[in-house]
Structure formats: C-alpha cells, structure tokens
Image 1: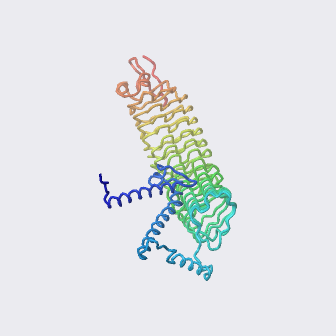
Image 2 (image 1 turned 60 degrees about the horizontal axis):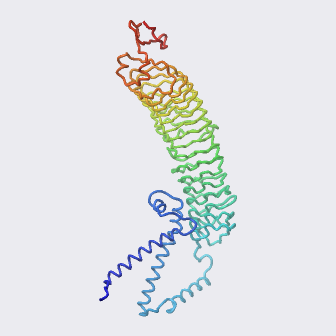
Image 3 (image 1 turned 135 degrees about the vertical axis):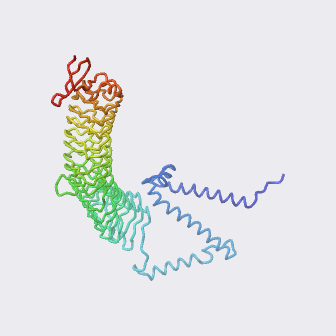
Length: 535
C-alpha cells in the first residue's frame, strides 16, 4: 500500500502554524522567568483591564528584551539565507567570508583613535542589576548618561550612587533601594519617572532640577523624604507621588495644572500645605491620613481654607487634624468621606454656598464638631454626620428634599432638630442612636418615614406627625421610646393615610375646639401640644 503524501503547501503551512504557536508559548514563558511571576489571568488583566505593578515591570523590562531577541533572530536567519544565496554555497557564513573579522577590525580601530567625546554614550540597560542585594555602592562613569528601567530596583543594600547628577533614569530605577541622605537629580531631567524612588525609606532629601515638568505616579511613595522643593516648572504631579513620605511641609507651585489623587496621602508628619496650583477641584485623597496636618492654604494655624475649589474629592482631608474648615461659596460637590474622622474639626464655614451634592460619610466621626448649618438645596449623602458625638446644633437649609439613611446616626449630643417643609423623605436609621434627642419638628412637607428613623432615640417621647405624612414603614418607629403621637390632621385623614399601625393606633388627632364626643384629641396651649381631656 502506497504511503500517503501531504502536499508541499500543507507542510509549509503546518510548519508555520506550529512555529508561530511555539513562539507565542515561549514568549509567555520568557516573560514569566525571573524574580517576579504572574499568572496568565493577571497578565491579561494588567495588559488590557487595569493597572498592575508587577505586569508593568514585566512589560517595561522583559517585553523589550523578548522582542529584540525575536527581531535579532529573524535578522540573523535572513542574513544567513542571503549570504548563502549570494555565495551559492550552503557553507557560507560570516566567519568564512571575512565579515566577522572586518567588524572586529572596525571596533578595534574606533577604540584606538576615538576619544571620550566622540565615543557613544553608555546606557545601563533595563533591569541590569535588579534584585542584586549584595550591591552597596555604585559609581557611574562619566559616559553613562542613562539608567534603564528598573536597573537597580530592589537592590536593598544600595546606599549611594555617585555620578547620578549626570545621568537620567527610567521608571523603577531605584525602587526599594537603601539610598541614604540627599540625592541630586540631573539638570537635564524633565520628568521623575513612575516608581523611580519608591520605598527608598532612608532617602531624606532630593534636589529636583529647574527644568523638571512632571513627577510620575508613586515616584517617591514610601520614601523617607523630610523636605522637598517642587520647582516652579512642574505642571503635573502623579498619583501617590509623595504617598507616605516623611514630609513636614509642602508647597505645590502655581505652575501645576494636574494634581492626581493620593498625591500626599499618608504623610503622617505633614503639618502644613500650601496649594498654589491652578486647579478648581481637589482630587481624591489628596491629604487623606495626614494625621498631623492642621493648616492648608491659610496663615491661621488649624485652618484649612478650601475656598478656591468648586469640587472636593473623596477623602481629601480624611483623618487630619484640621480645626476650622472654610469652603467655597461656589462649591458644588464633595466626595465620600471628604472630611470624615477629623477629630479636631470644630467648625465648618460653608461661605453661603447652595445646592451642594454631599458624598456619603462627608463628616462621619468628626467627633469635635458641635454646630453645623447645612446649605440650602443640598443633597445629603448617607451617614453624612454619623458618629459626630458632640454635634448639638443642626440647621437644615430650605430646599433639602431628603434626610439620607444614617445621616445623623449616633449623634448622641443632638437635642433638637427642625425638618424643613422641603423634605419629603427621611431615610432608614436617619436619627438612629440619637439618645439626647428630645424635640423633632416635622414641618408640613414630609411624606414618608423609612425603617428605624428614630430607633434608640431614648429621650424622644412625643412626636408631631404632619398631615403631609402619608406613609411610614412598619418599623419606622420600632425600638423608639415615643409614647405619644400628635397627628396634625383629622381622624379621617389619619385613617386614610398609610402610617404604620404603631403610630396610628396610639395617635391623637388635632382638634382646635374642646371635643364634644369621646376620642383622642390634642391642641396647642401656648405653643405646646396638649391632650384634650376625655369627654
């Protein structure tokens, strides 16, 4: 039986497909060989979905080498085929026909006659010494003008680099090094790359060049910087650029037009900050966790003057030591937890602003806040004042339509509050745990009370229900100490409403004149709700 022969074209196609598949497989294997390893799914997410530091290192350090190796292999193969074709000999190679010898001669010739000025500058390739924990000191030669991506990353014993003032460097270049004291960045540098000095905990000072225009993301995050002067040429500061450094004071120059989130968050020794930057919105977590920060944009210690900003991001001053807060009359929005956990915050000046969209937990657990007047027409975020344990006086501006869920939860010092007529809904647990609350005025306008509105309000024993209130949930008054409900309408109106039976069955309805029939009625005596005696 004759052997089956495959067409030549099919053989070539099959060989090409197998080679391509093997190439991709070996590329992926090569990308994952080294100190940093990632799974395929992590690689995919880091490349196409969201930023991943390990994937970024692989992309910047290993991918260029892989592609250079592929291109070099292709070039060598093509050169070999061309040489053999031209020489018409399958044995032809660079060594036999003198190409190798010629290249060596030229190299020797250039070395012999060229001086240091005409020699090409030297570049330390990416990752060249990455992870070498035995290196303690580096001296850069005068011809070295660039240090590649991650060249000395994770050299945990490296304490000094001489000649750095003459060389530029790439991302991750000195990440995790033990650089000590002060360093000077080359005057030609216009950008501090991302993660360049991340986690250099012993680096206390850096001299930035006048030509600098941007500071990359996490460039100094985790470094031990105690002082830094940001040049007036800088226009952009990246995310987490100075995250968790040891800075005590900082000035952001007027040249900055782009300030990314977390730029100075976690700087626990920072006491004052001056933002001259040409921006109208403070990004998320700008100074979050700066537990010693008392003064921002002000000559008065303890004051944070944010009157220049129409928008304030999430957690901007969260967990700081600010005592007085001044906001803009043009403020339109604050992010979640913008001023939460500010345990020294005593007063807030809204400067006459209106229509502010407040994020969730805006002032949550600001335990020194005693009084606040919420701007008119604003939207209150959930848990906005939750845990403000010394808050005694709250004035709600007209135009507010909803008291959000948990808004005043555990405000244990709050004694009274007036809910304006513009409010139609009171959210779940909005006054839960307000144990000192004795007086609540629900003006005509409130239509609905949600679950546990007055839960654990142990001092609230009576409540006037407006006629506009047509609906409450079955648990709206659960766990409260309310004994008397004064309904502002008639018995017929009460019967037609969807108020929970807890209140409906024990409510007194309003009657201006003394009753002539048996029933549960009330009226005002010198402004005080008073129950009419039974007929």
